[in-house]
Image (tube, rainbow, N blue to C red; front, side, top):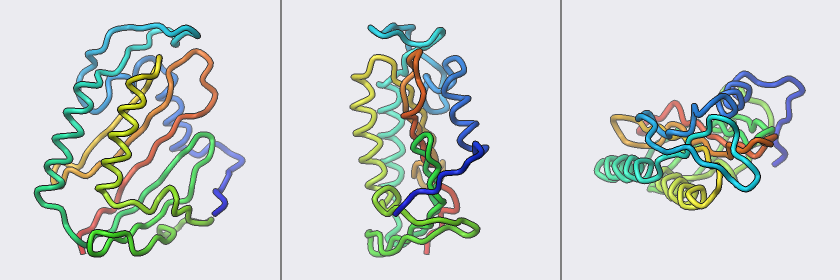
Length: 183
């Protein structure tokens, strides 16, 4: 269960980190407009930081979860790519049967070792994880949150969170879901 650590900065990690530290790109959350107000923290949020609108983020999450619940397939697979900065974990294919994770394997073209503690989740568990993170981040002084959802099934396609403080070096986390297939 050892994550792969690359000596060069992977494009997806670099993109995520650059997005996290440039302006308030992630601060609005989701694909909607930014409605939060500028804020400061005792240790200082970065210049231009805008606090996420947690009411809008939670409403977006609730709406997506309702769409997922209305048509939740019992059997599906998906690929997940996860970053826990500065570590990029290998892409993992997750298989769900009967509403439970039954298998995790490396996604095609990936090398390394699957970390089931991070990847072995049903979509329902991912929704729960997102809700818990939103709750925790709402209490943080300089939170950054971004989430997107599939328009057909409502499952999350991206979730990213971190801190928009002046001294950010790591601690930014993100996962992306692709290749969702109903079996």
